[in-house]
Length: 461
Image 1 (cartoon, helix red, strand yellow):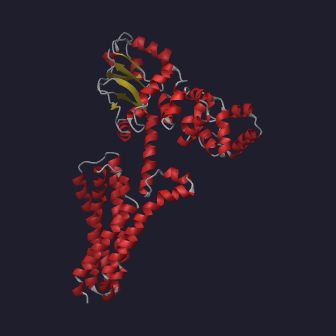
Image 2 (tube, helix red, strand yellow):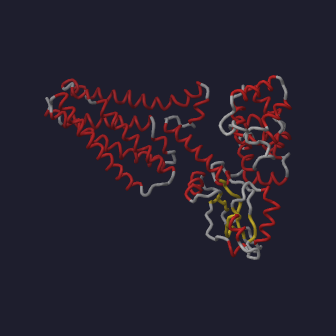
Image 3 (cartoon, one colour):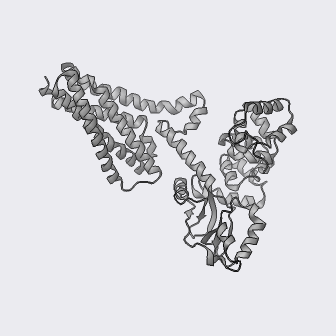
C-alpha cells in the first residue's frame, strides 16, 4: 500500500502546518518532494486536502501525481471531482488510473461520463478488467449488482482443504477480501460458505463440501442497496455474496460498501426531511443560487399552505373570532402541537420503512393513533385548564382542550397515512416530512379547531 499511517496526525485530519507545507511545495512546483510527502498520508485525509484546494490547484495535483498514488485516494473523492479528473485525462492516462482501483469503484465513476468518453477509456484497460466492468455496467449503482466486486474468493466443492489453502496463499492478493471462502458447484452455482478460520482448523484431507455451511445468506443482482445494507447489518456479515437468477455466484458486496450505503441514505433522507429533496451534504457546499433553487420550491408549499390557505380559513371564521376574541389566542398552540405530533410520527414511520422494521401498516397506524390520542388527552387537559384560567370561560377551555385532542390524534394518523400513500405511489416517503407534512398538519389542525368552535359557538356568546 502506498499510504502509511502517519505518526500522530493521520486518521483525524491533516494538521494545518502539514497542509501549509504541502501547499508550499505545490506553489514551488516541487513535485518529487510533494509526492514523497503525500505517500505518508491516509487516503481519506489526502482526499480532504485535495477537496479544500482551489480548483486550479486541484486539477494540477490530480494530473501531476502518479496514477498509482491518485488511485489510493480516488474512491474517497466526491463524484464530481472524480468525473472532472477523468475528463481532463487522456483515455490512456484515465485507464492507467482506473486499473489500480476495484472494478466496482471504476464502474461508479465511468457511469458519470458520456458513453463516448467512457468507451474510449475502457478500450485502454486490461482485457480482464474490461470484462469485469462490462459485467457491472448494466446494473444501477444503487443495486447489489452495481455495488458488488467481482473479485471474489470461490472454489469448487470437490477440492480438499489443503488445495484450498494453497490456492489462497498464492492468490489472496487478487481479492478485495478473504474473510469468507465461497463454495460453488461445477456450474458455478453458490452451494456453501466457510470462514477462513474454519478452513484453517479443518483436516487437510476433508473436501470443502464436507465442512462448508450450506445455508448461505445471499442477495440477488437487482436487490436495492437498502435491502443489502439491512441484510449485512442484521446478520453481522463482513461481506455478502451476490447471485444471479440461476443462483450462480457473480460477486460480493463488502461491509465498507454497506457503510457508504448507510451514510448515503442518511444524507439523502436528511435532505428530504429538511424539505429539499436533495442530499444534505450537497447543500453544505453548493453555490447560493443552487441552494435557493433546491429549498425555495418547498418553502412555497409552506407559503401557500400556512400562509394563503390558513389565511382563507381564518377569514372564513372571522365572525367567530370577532365575536369571541379569546378563540384567536389559542390558534398558534393548536397548530404547533398538531404539526409537531405529525412530524414526530412521520419521521418515526419513515425511519421504520427505511430499515424495514415494521409489520402491518394498518396496525402501526392504529398504534400511532393511540399514542396521539394519549398525548392529546394529556396536552388537551392541560390546555383546557390553562384556557379556563386565562379567559374565565369553561366552555372555551373545553373547546380548546377537545380541539387539541382531536388535532393531535388526527396528526398521528396522518403521519403514517401520508408516507404510506407516497410509498405506494412510488414517491420516497421522507418527502412527507418537513414543510409538506407541517403545512398539512397546520391546515387540518386549524380546520378541526374552528369547526369545533363553530359547533359550540352558541354556548359561548
